[in-house]
Length: 450
Ligand SMILES: [Zn+2]
Image (cartoon, rainbow, N blue to C red; front, side, top):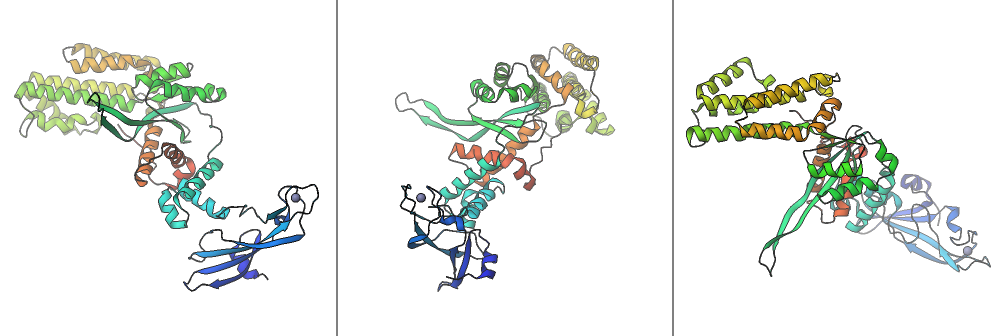
């Protein structure tokens, strides 16, 4: 069969030439290929170039669409006879790097599948529909692609973040023997991310306990572990214990977004408790506390002078309970003042005396209002986690990267309508959060304000 140089250049599959293109009755084009790569004649066992054709064969590997439409490939191959005396292999068929022996797909189609899923964030199902191969083939191609393109070794970083995400819904089942309801599936993934370098997700493990965290950390190369000086976490004692065990030299940094959230929660609890005390019911329109409930949630610097005056007047009008609510709001603001000293907010490394002065102001305020249990609890939590909080103020490291990744992971899982296979989900999450995919994804913005 002769070659069509123009069609060959257009088809552009290395190692073969287009002999002809014909349109079938169903309108789909069939591309007939012949081998041009001389290396295809080399015996895979001994390397000798064969000269005698044993028989001819036709294979039908799948390929990418061409010119906006599907094509069928007919590759006319030869089966060669190896005449090397010492060689055990009697005969072999031709193969080229783009279409290795027994492969049903061209390499470029396989790569396109992996790329669509791993980098493009498409679902496996949709990629199969777009490009042709079945689900398992696309999934295999994705795994191969990810292995090739995900960084082989963890990039070193000074700070990592650890966070957990729930995988799907918890499943309860009634035990037929005891008739008790038992939790049979409650899968959590713990994610390890680069907290400062923006290099995405380092790894994920299943489970929620200290062992799963410590095991993952201990399994990493010693050089990588030594490099990690800070670990950002939420207020999670389990994680803290695991870090002390696996990275004893590292400093735990508390993500202060959660401290502010906690202060807001305590303030809301106190407001509701005192509203009940005063009115014997929930706040309703016309009550002072109802008027100010939204202002209480705001930060001091976001209130206008009028709003601040309204807050004070209304709470004063409420009497004792109102003054107590105001004291709780002040406590929250004093805590925010303390956290606001953090280096990434002021761009100046705070000195320890400024930090301890701010801490003292908060503690003294709480001591003055020790009859308010919500404030006492808040101050106790701050004490328990003080080292981590101070580390945050001094370094400005947060767990925002974890939260950003978690959003991408959840979005990814929603696109796929959930994952049944956990290993696949971890692989997809890794791909979705690496730089390559994030560049393509407009939703990856880890921005938070408090
Ligand atoms: Zn041979």
